[in-house]
Amino acid sequence: AQSVTQLGSHVSVSEGALVLLRCNYSSSVPPYLFWYVQYPNQGLQLLLKYTTGATLVKGINGFEAEFKKSETSFHLTKPSAHMSDAAEYFCAVRGILTGGGNKLTFGTGTQLKVEL
Amino acid sequence: KAGVTQTPRYLIKTRGQQVTLSCSPISGHRSVSWYQQTPGQGLQFLFEYFSETQRNKGNFPGRFSGRQFSNSRSEMNVSTLELGDSALYLCASSFSSGTNTEAFFGQGTRLTVV
Image (cartoon, rainbow over all chains, first blue to last red; front, side, top):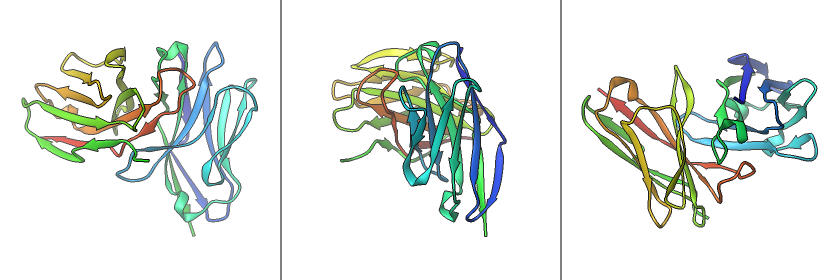
């Protein structure tokens, strides 16, 4: 079955510093990969997605992620953290091996804290 | 363009009762998926409905059920509530049912079982 692993349940960065949130996927076939953000008491908002084509994907709010097949990774980065980036981030995979359709399989999430 | 609307936002129920949650997808979207989010288990897929048919189902007991109406609105029902059913229930709306389709989430319904 396809799954994703997020390394680090909590990440803390200083405002203006690089944000790096890690996600590794397990799949024998190319998956579709997503990053979502969740603010307290809110639903999930799509940051970016990889389906096919360019492996460097740019998303909203200055975030981007690179699909690396050789490393089975899809890490999320942002060059300069802002206080408003503090939230929980979820990596997710969708594909035939997850059951098809629109079923998303999520990682366990990474809580990002941004400090002054 | 209106987003995904889930009602109610908060709900408190007693063990043994049943509950119905509602989700109105984005206009024109025909797929609705439901997820349960808890601190212990994270985000787990419940089921997906597309054009009034259940397309996919997660690993939940039969107490969890759902349906979709002809206007694509969806409801999920949980019968004989248990304390462990306390969770944030999220609904996701998609235009179609396919691996390349983007899912838009509602704000969720926070269910507390006491």
